[in-house]
Every structure is written in structure tokens, then in C-alpha cells.
Length: 250
Image (cartoon, rainbow, N blue to C red):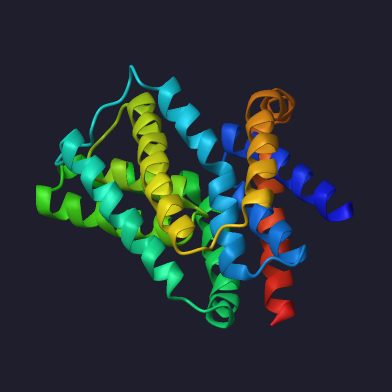
């Protein structure tokens, strides 16, 4: 009963965090691991649980979406699917022992990305002043970020926003719309591959999916009452604590 309650609470809060700031993976992955789910399966299962939130976000920005400079919408979609597939396939061939060693570093990187996200996006915007990137560079950047997202979801939103800024995109609604669309696409294809590889615990995934969806709609209203700085550094603190716990478990 405690395990079920932990998963529900983690998923609910993760859904609320993703709706207003991001960082939901900092809760879903550790919660699954601490309830006895193997690390690789926990990563895949947590990704399944958060998929509806990405899809809902993409739908909400459907009228504002525009492909970043250097890429067409079709190319962006294609690279998202290819990269998500490659990242998910890489996860399938990663052993639990290896992933257990990698995940603290991934959490640390994701926490740093989240903590310095505003500065990273500002730097990306400054770098874009010289003009849009070439289609080749834009495609390579999109593919690399998509592979990362298919393998490990943490910090994906920050990476995508920074990438779009570097490519010369300036409209925030368009950037957020594409961020959610790309996240939904690469997560969806990754989920298919995870499922085919038998890396999803469906009972946990489905109950967490319901809780995360409820958190995205209802919990976000509560989270918005917090000052943005408090919310952001609360997420950073959570990420650091989870990172420390994973390093300690090794």
C-alpha cells in the first residue's frame, strides 16, 4: 500500500511540475526505483506515465506551432521519431547495472540544465543573433537532442528550448509548442519500443499516468501560487537530493 501511495503522489506532483516548469522525471524515476522496479524498466515506465502531459501540451499550443529556422515541420517530426527510436533502442541494450551507474550522472546533468535553464536559453538567444543555422547543423542538433530524449527524458525541455533559440526561433509560444510536440513524438515512439522490448511495467505505468494527468490539470493550479523562484529552486533541490541518493546507493 505504501508503494502504491508513493507512486501516485510522485506521479501527481510530477504532472503538476511538468505543467508549470518541468522536472517531473526527478520524481517518477526515483519513486519507481525505490519501490523495487529495475532502473531501466523504471526509466521506461516513468516515461510512459508522463506521455499524456506532453500530448496535451502540444495540443494546447497547436495554433502557435512553427518549425524552427533551418528545419521544416516534416523534417522536425522525422528527426524526432528517428532520434527517439535510436535513444530508446540504446536504452534497451543498456543493462540495469550499467544504467544504475549512468543514472546519477544523468540526473545531475538534468538538474544542472534545469538550474541554469534561463541562462542557457539567454545564451542560445544571443548566439542566434548572427542568423539562423544551416539545415545541416539544425538537423544534427535536433537529432542529438531527440536521441537524448529517447534514452533519458530529464532536462529534455530545457535542451529543446535552448536548441530552438540557437536556431534562431524567437517566438516563445512557437518554441513551447514545438517543445511539447517534439517531446510527445519522441516519447511516443520510445514508448512503443520500450513496450516491444518488454521494459514497461504496465500496472505502475497506468496508475501513474492517471495521477500525472490529474496533477497536470489540478495540481498545476496549486503550484502556480508559489513564486517562480521558489518553485524552480525547489525542483533543483529535489533533483540534487535524488542525485545524491542514487550516488549513495552505488
